[in-house]
Length: 496
Ligand code: TRP
Ligand code: ZN
Image 1 (cartoon, rainbow, N blue to C red):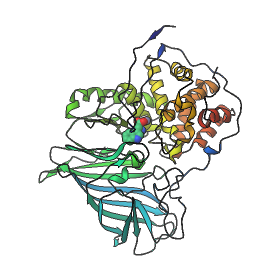
Image 2 (cartoon, protein in one colour):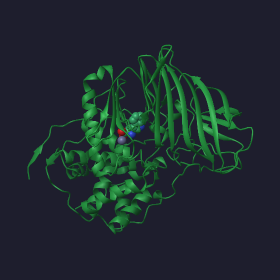
Image 3 (tube, rainbow, N blue to C red):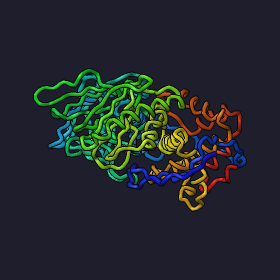
Image 4 (cartoon, rainbow, N blue to C red):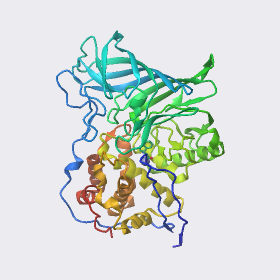
């Protein structure tokens, strides 16, 4: 087999911590398939894989909805007592004053009797709240908007709450060593990337991925600017009195951190992929030279992933390059965004793999983040394998060789709130999948990944569910493998 060495490349992408994610320099072994190999013996199953958070299940106190959804590591995030079905967001943004004005209608279903409940909202001024058309009283406490409807909401009932608000959005800062995220103003608009809990910087929400919902967006900006949200445009933008309104609809359930209202001067190209999937690509003027490449690669890579992971989960694919130099990318549903750089294919492959793993299948609590980042990083290796750059096995070995890598002390199966987007979650997470692939073989591994994507399409997932499915599909006891790779603070025994 031909083996040659590629020059080093480094991704401009970094996590919001500012830490660059430097990709591997890998020896290429074209056509080499990963060998099947046994891993180390059984270890007691990890308690860290139990107890999923689920929508609306915070600790409830009588008829007061809980101020958190029950994520042990992010206790204030999301809320309890109800389950959001749909967000209808009417938003108007003026880049010169940086002022956002919004009216958000949230359709939800109560999962307990409610005399009061919370939404998450960071800053901004609320002028009016109504529940089912009747004015409701409200108060603010940190990032909680506490709402008392005029009438008690009964367990099981649907209700609609409308919040009118305005102000200059403030992004989140470093709350968990994450840098700046959320609604970030730019000279001509805004760069909106909200993982993990920055949706509340621009709309009142149950801001936690355990409560997914569908979205309608109606976004008004000064004429000449483009407003980009998730899903597809419903109709042609309408202009009146110097302002243009864009209507977007995401009809598939979406986690709040994947919602965006990125605005500014953009060059747009639309069309379809070879397999017929609609594509929407947009780049800030200064990246106009990258529009066609973004469009073409996005279509090609989305089509390829659909042959590996199963049917694409949404109604369109796309990508946005903004000129805000974040240096990172985010997998915003249907339209990943790249912050101030032209992404190389590996990064597009990463963000588009997230459309299956993260966006369609969403985690129910943040400590399971490896189910997003480990899979998306492994997808980069699969892309390299597909395009003949290097094999997943060579990437795995390269990382494994470095016994001093700090990822060995960070078990990726329990991502830490104070260092959520650690390289361990990405790289050791990807290594976990490769160790699994070698243990069960390609004939079981790829069907497993497709079965995983299919079984939980548009839902929430836990590590425990993945382990159970892997054992079912392979017919093997894999608790020892997963425990060593995900839950032990040391380098697992070599995979031979
Ligand atoms: N999920 C992103 C990725 O791996 C990284 C990320 C985490 C991020 N938090 C963010 C990007 C906030 C932008 C904003 O591709
Ligand atoms: Zn990622």
